[in-house]
Every structure is written in structure tokens, then in C-alpha cells.
Length: 110
Image 1: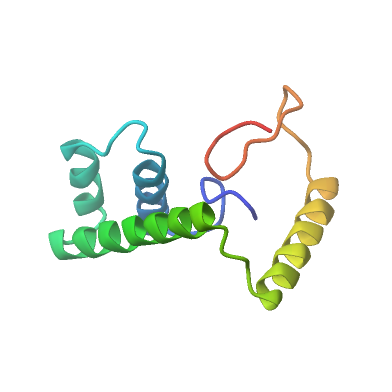
Image 2 (image 1 turned 135 degrees about the vertical axis):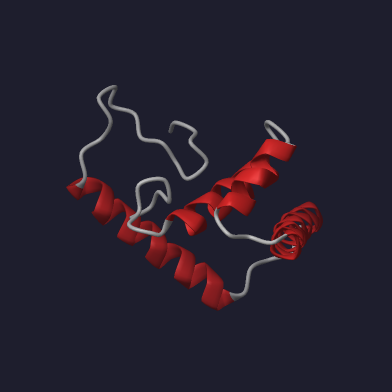
């Protein structure tokens, strides 16, 4: 499954992944209501803080690496190729949305 919104995962994990996408895209910025939603799923303020730190750091380091043209390690290039191939195989078996356009993990259409 390539979309956390429809994956067979528990609701707290889905809520945390929604928060990660929202924080990564910053559109819209997370609000107090979003944080309350995470708390309602059992996340403490310390949990939310830790998640925001990890998500923010990951976004930061990826942007720095991209800006400096840091090449990927060979194993990661191979792994990425395997993921693409698996995704192509999966997509050929799945049906697309009614409009014929698939959403990626961030809800953007490709």
C-alpha cells in the first residue's frame, strides 16, 4: 500500500503521518486543533515535540543535501530503483481514481 490514508494501520499512526505531511508541506501550518487531535490519539506533548523535532530535522537535512548536490550512496540508488519497480507493478494491478489520476503520498495528483 503506498498511501497511508488508506493503509491498514491504526488511527494513531495515521494521525501522526498526517501531522508529518502537514509539517513537511507547511500548508496549512499545524494549528492548536491539530495538536489536540494528536493528543486525542494518545500522544503526549513530549511525543508531539519529539515527532516535530524528527520530522523537522529530516526535512532540513534532505534540503541541505539536495542544495549541496550530495550524491546518494550506491545501495540507496539500488533500493530506490527496486521501490520504483515495485510501485510500477503495484500500480498496474490497482485501479486509479474515478478521474484517472492517482494521488501520491502527499495527496498531490500525478
